[in-house]
Image 1 (cartoon, rainbow, N blue to C red):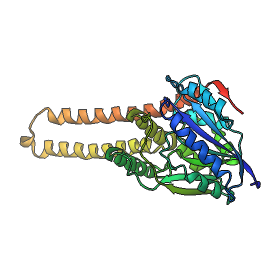
Image 2 (cartoon, rainbow, N blue to C red):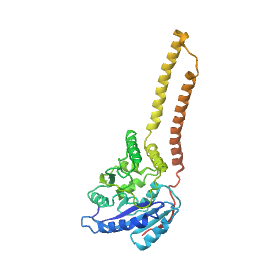
Image 3 (cartoon, helix red, strand yellow):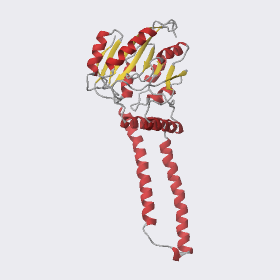
Image 4 (cartoon, helix red, strand yellow):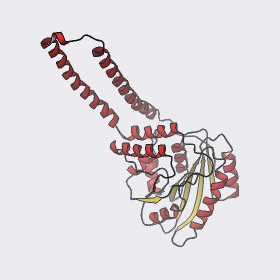
Length: 318
């Protein structure tokens, strides 16, 4: 690492006309103050705002901010490509020695940025912000998030618990990340697999004060599914194990039926249950198996097309 370095902050924005005018001045003031600290060797910074196909005045506000502030740049995507792709678009546009990704709502404690930069100066290539607790979440979100991280762990997915997208990456870590050409992105799983020196920074996540969250339950479920199917074949193996188990149970059930019919013919009661229930059960298992297999085949289908993950409609870079 050189004695001085440049920093880019990549911030995806989607329908953030309410939050941007409130939060960006706070980020600017903080970064200007950080660069004046004696223990921080960073010499310059930029803020890369990525408009992820917003339908409100987000891009208009970004353009105004770039004109008023020399440190602010903007990238506009041609359509809504999703949070992960918007973040990747900003990362691809960065030319700095260090890049930090964060959300525009300032729920992630901005004070952790100084600690991240210090860890970079000590030799870390990846500095991951990890939430101290989930007190700011609803009980439902807290429960489902904790359950999801446990599920990822069971399936061998390399995700850091309570780490979202608040992180610092060195230039070589960023180059390694951009070498992945996957269509189905799950950055929270890809980044820990890079393998360079990693440090975790705990921080307190705050409640959102400006605007409303754009991460709906549907989007969270989609991200969760991508995390599992992009890194783990455990669901496919679980289907195989279930098939073997059903086969073994069927053998025992068949033996019991034949033994009863031969040894105790008068106790055999004809009925539809012995026919209908196994049919329903096996039919449900088959549909479940086809659904899981279809999800993986769909992923393969999308990957083989090699379609671009995003298109940049307009950019204001300095």
